[in-house]
Structure formats: structure tokens, C-alpha cells
Amino acid sequence: MSKIRKLLVCVFAAVCASMLALVACGEGSADGDDNATVELKTHEIVMKVGDEIKLEAVSSRGAKLSWSVDDKRIATVSDDGTVKAVKEGNATVFVTAGKSSDYCAVIVSEGTQEKVDDEIKEDGYIYHEDFDDRTAVPGYLRINKSGGGAIGVADGEMQLTTVGTGIAFATYVFDETLSGKIVAETRVKVSSTSFSNILFFYRGEQGYSTDDVIACLGMNAGTFQNHDGGGWKSIGKSYSTQIWYTVKMELDIGAGRYDLFIDGQKFARIPFRKTGDGVEDRIKLLKFGTDKENAGLYYDYIKVSQGSDESAPVIESSRTVYRLALDTENSVSFDYSVDGNPKPTVTLVGAQDNPEGATVSEDNRTVTFDETANGTYNFGLTATNKIGNAEKRFTVIVSDDDSVILDTDFSSVPPGMTFTANNGDAKVEGGKLILTTNSSGSVLTYASYDFGQPLTGKVRVRMTVTVGTNAFSNILFLYHSGTEGFDPLSCTNSIAVENGMLKYNAGGWKDIERITLGTAFELEVLFDFDNHTVDLWLNGDKKLTGAAFRKSSGDTGVLTIGSDKVNTQITYDSMSFVKEQE
View 1: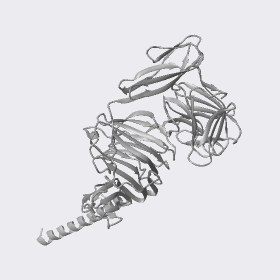
View 2: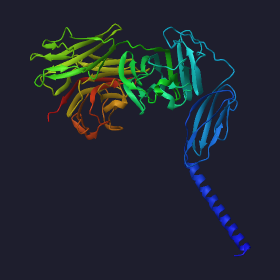
View 3: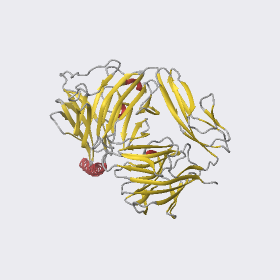
């Protein structure tokens, strides 16, 4: 082959290869940009003037990343994601790939300026702030706010709010890494159901990466929630907006867990979000606030102290109501545990107005009933040591018919039923159970009944109920044993009335039949806890056959009825839960 021919062949091949490469690049780029996703590994950084930090972004399809910053006076960002702090203030860096984007909040402090240290140390506390004598946010706190976020102090309260989208966080860096047992306590309320970071403990002094969160507590969608490393979970406690709650976390750093108390009531012992390789021993920072829309957190005080090996008694029990059929057994053994150091002394005694026929054993746990026993018996358990005492009440319902779980005409309050009323009323009066909420404000009214044991087999429910308004009314809601209030994550069955429509939830709300507001109707429901199905009758007419449970569960043990909506009126004339005989 001549040299000229060889040259032409090479040129032709090169041109073809180039055209193919251009076509391939053009097609790949278009697809990549249109469908690309991008996510930053960090969503908040704290810098001093002159510092540089390179942000890491994970993108799909090899799409080109575009970087920008909303305020170049505060910080700049290069094409490779390197952020340089220019001036004290807050800025936001954005990264975009096609139609996908993410952001990182940048907090810049003046490197040569000394931190304003107006913290007032209190004896016996690692950190103590009650905001009482403050007219502005304490200077020792590191503040991060942007968009619609606002942070201030007024009337002895610290306020962190967002209007629309925004960020409002405050951070406190401890003088030393926390160790041993730590007690963190706050009095807090929220103004919405948006996610709120109540108390978040981080390793290190940055406090911006979720990978650094060691222990955390949040309030979201009406429930207190914890992250145990496997995701956010409800702790079984609901909340109402604009209501103060006293929250205490007793952290055992060496064990990687904490005990949670809300308004003095202890909830489950909760594992840290992150443990292993001693990571739980590196807590150095406390952070609180929110980055969710239209949120509001209000703190009356925050206190952190070193815990002691000595502790007041705590009584934990899986159930407080027991049922006994004398034809099958004649005693009950209360399921409880007692913690405390020094070891508490435990005493179990029967109420003075108990019917005759019950004897408390020396083990302060077992109660034996003779053949004449009948009715409702109450017992008080007390645990005492030099630090303090704890009390727990147990109820035993003795009957010769174990098929009747609950049967009441509301001539009196059924044993085991409790009431909660915030901005409303819950009462038994004139042979009726009456549940109402006011016409404005934050409301929560409900009656709860602990069945004393998980419901099993087939249980037939009958009730006569009147709904007086269009407000959403929880007329028959069943929950996991131990659930308090309206916790959607623990709800297994739910029947409601809204705008005059009877509804059932089987993974989503479905209309059943219209009812007449202000007029009593008969509701009959057959729950099959073996097959997780529901049959329903309204005024004698069958409306549901074999409907699915809202959530399959072998541990349904609590009835909660009422409403968290304004202007509710619900009245019950009678109610019964009877186990169907096989």
C-alpha cells in the first residue's frame, strides 16, 4: 500500500472515530443530565475566614456538576466544590446535575475575633441555661439560620422558628468530651408537627454531619421519636402543639444507651444512634433546632449534668391491668422490674376499698384470690431508697366469664379507663362517655382503655355512639400494648367519622357509609386477630366483609378514642368487647 493511501486510510479512520465519540458523548451527556441525581455528603459546614473545605458530592450517570453560592461576599466555591470562607456570616452553596440539586449551609466566623463568652456556669452542671435574664441569644451559642429561619430570646424562652423554608439551629460545644453517666433535661414545646431536633448529641465540634450524631431525640408528626441506628421510630408517646413537656435523657455513654423520661414518666431504654469502636465516648457537642418548613421550638431551660451511680427507683411494667377467670386460675403475678441504686425496698398493698377475697404474697408480686372473689381490685406498688421513691398501680378484674373483655353502660368509669383533656373535656356523666374539644387552639382529648392483655382470636365489638360535628373523630382506634395517645405508628385498627362519613383505614382511609350527625348509631365490628380481618355492621346492616387490618399485629392491647381536632363532640351510650367462643 502506498504511503499516500495509508495516510488517507488513517485520516478516514480517525475522523470516523472522532464522529462516533462525539455522537456517543452527545447522547450520554443528554441522558445523564436529564436523569442525573446529585447528593452532598455534608449539608452544613462551620469555617473561619480564610479556611477552605472541599465538599464531596455523589452523582449518577457521570453528569457534570455545577457549583454556585448565594452570597459571594461570605464564601466562594470553585468548579471542583472547594469552598473558601471570605467574611463572617451565613451563605448557602448549591450543586446541580441536570434537574437535580442539593445544598450545604456555610457558617463563617471571623478568625481573629474572640468568641463572646457570656455563659454563666452553675455549680453541679456541665451546662445550664434558663434564658431568664437574657434579652438576646447567648453569645456563646453557635447560631445557624438562613432563609425563613429566626432565632431569638423573649420572656425567658429561646425561640427557633422557620417561616416557609429555612434553617434555625443553635449549637453548644462542651468544654470536655462527655463520659460516664450524663443527665440532660429540658422543658420544651413546639408550634407545629414539623420535625424538630429537640436534643441531638454529636461527636466532635462540627455538628453538621448525620454520621456524627451519637444520640438524638425528635418530635415529629405528633409523636416523640428516636433514631436507634435503624431509622426513626416512635417511642409510644404523643404530643400536642403549644403544650410544655419536661424531657430528661439519662445517657449511659459507656453502655451506648439512654433512659428517657417525659413529664416524669419513664419510657423504654433506648440505644444510641451510633455505637461501636468507642464512638459513643466522643460526644462533645449539643445541637437543637430545625430545618423543616413552618416549624417552631421553644425552650424554657436546658440543663446537662454529670450523673451519679446512685439513682432513684424506677418501676417498669409491660402491663398494669389483669383479668382473672376463677374457673381457670386463682392468682396473678404482676410483671414488673425495679431499678435503683441503692437497691430499692419494694412493697405491694391492696386498696382499702377492695372487695374481700384477695391475699398479697410475701414476694410483693403475686396475689391469690379465693372462690368468693369478684369485681375490680386495685393494688399499689411502692419502691423506695434513700434517693427517692416510685409508685405504680395495678388493677385486677376478677370474673367468672373470661369471654367478656369490656362491657359498660357508662353508669360509672370502667376500671382501667383513663382520660386526657387538653383544651377540651373527657368525662363519664349521666350514663354517657362524653369527649369534646374546644373550637380553637391546640386540642387533644381522649379516653384510653388498657385491655390488660393482647386481644386474640375473634373479638366482637358493639357500641352506641353519637358524633355531633364534622370534625375528624376517632371513634374506634386500637393500638399496640403500652401505647399512649394517638400514635399512628402503633395503630393497628382505626374507624372514624369525618364530615358525616363513617370511614375505615386499611392502609388508607376509605368511606363506608354516611351517618346523621347528632343522631346515635349502632356500630358492630368483628375483629379476627388470627387472620387480621374485619367485618363491620352499621345499624344492623353489614358494610364490610374481610377488610384488612390497618397494621397486622399480635400485640393489640389498647383502645384510644377521642380527637385532636377542634370542635369535636363524641358521646358513647354503651360499649362492649366480647371474645367469640371457638
